[in-house]
Image: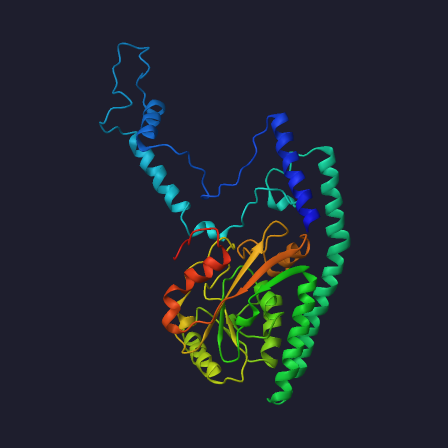
Length: 382
């Protein structure tokens, strides 16, 4: 990892130097929003609009036409454009929209998908990128695909077989062992490097584990360190096949979010589940959708209406080695997983936070965000 970081740093410096020599403009990620805005005042922008938008000669070259000074406080029709533009910018560049796009890296990690400046490269850097491409697609990807297919196949087959067993200790024991084994195989398929913090706070049976949500692999990251009964949206395709097989061996709860009857049924099943202290802790992602791992959105209250102990978990990915965020509007599940397996690695940290009761949940979202992003201020509660 340290060697890769050194290579990434050198590649970024080489891009910047090459662009400077060729007088190319480098794309700089705008960390403050989607739209790059110049730090100008209202008065300055109105002056500029009046200069460019007015048909009058404001430079004094035509003495026969006298127009208002750009600094005049009187209203001009061209002022409308300023307020229209600002209004549209505020709609597009709001605090919520930017959380649903992948983060643009300031440094280049030799993945063309992660930085717009990759075309400004030298011959040596091109050769290095080609070597990385060869390693990722010809060496790592086939091995990862083999492990992924093995893990998913074993999960589907074994959970289906276990589903025929009568409910009891033997079924629960086999289900836990199979889930752990298959999840750990899938973690190896992603070359995931996971650091778990404060394992003494791991969720216990009869509790509810809530975590921030970046990607479907959040489930694998957490479940490779302990088994959970999961709650989530019903999916189709490959994910749907996996869901239907898993529910045969373990009391997972899948629902259709658009169905009101499903919501009431889920609430009832959750209450029944947590009352049995012998059942696995429930894993819920209260944000309800995948966020780009730069902030935490407001959690939906339904997760906290059940009288049970809440075990908060914070997951933070390192995008320098591979972007874990799943933009479901752009990528299907299979294409997303292929992107993950063709990255360098998935590096993340998991913090098990102290358990909380319902009386402490008013500040829960801020607690989780502070754990995930300790160097940034608490962001949107939307």
